[in-house]
Image 1 (cartoon, rainbow, N blue to C red):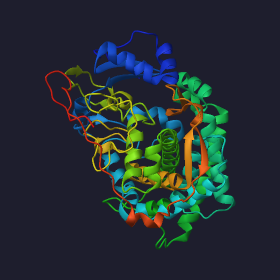
Image 2 (cartoon, rainbow, N blue to C red):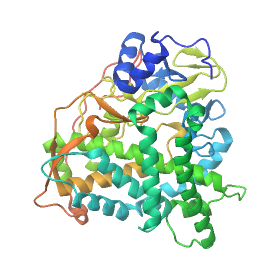
Image 3 (cartoon, one colour):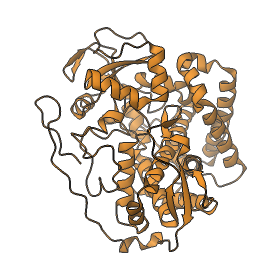
Length: 467
């Protein structure tokens, strides 16, 4: 899609250079453009043109507009080779809202908490094989946990050849598509030419065959009874007219859950472990089971290290004024979590990881974007955070971690997902007296760090008190 005219200024580097820097040094790209052009600027990356928003006020303004004014699915169509187009992520308008009402219920309340035992079991299995006393990349181990959890949670399949085969095929496909060198090539090829590659089509077809076969097996069960896996719940779900999801729609929803729920949660956990390993006091508080601290640690990790650089893009259906700019129809607006999350006028010491920054408090509106926002907020956000804090709780109670190198601004990549450099290595030792999870009722509390007053946010405006 050609970029519309009348967009805010931005770097005048060639698209190739902007694309390469986006892949290799996204923080440097966004920070340098922000210093030069302010809170609203335009980038040209791959085949995309983004109007970048770097201020919470602008983010709130954007997310305040409804689905009759903004599209998100059409702005994310580059993901269609892997995810398809009949899922809650890529649908727009009234069709998206209908699908969201079907897909959202399995991720709320007691249904979500029913997976806690499964998450803890997966984590303990990984802990039992963790090499001690040597640097170990955390990312691969977090991938192993989150993949096993999402396969069990989504399909409810017991361990065996079926689960192993689907896991192997999915892992191979994701490794192939997210290889950093290959990802750069894919960025320049574009989604249509990627879908034409025989190696991609072959691997995707193998995954699709397994998913389709599992859907067919589950439909034959008929009465799904008390099953709590997401596939069974989606098979039983109906829209307001009594309509059910078709097989190809189920496939697109399931592959989206498998890919998005696996990759981003593993990245967040790898970042969390690298931070915990460098903070002895935080680690001891986590190991002691301080109430709410594991959840606060994950929230802070997602602030400082959001897995994806942009927090939910939108495309304008009509001309619109956003953040003081009159923008044309077709413009793609992209709130930048890498910039918004590190604003000193919103967060005290924004470059520091503080384990209790969000203990008994929530991030300011428009200033925490790892799951997007508005009516397009990720349906799996609650599950992802619940899974991550449960894994972190198990790991820190069982292992003592220390850093395996100096902190670095360098990052790694898994496709669009930002991961720690060198896959986040830490050195682990067995904790002498691990605290059982069952003692949560006796966990001690700890005072939240005091916040300090903040300065103005944007011209002639006051923002939230920095956290």
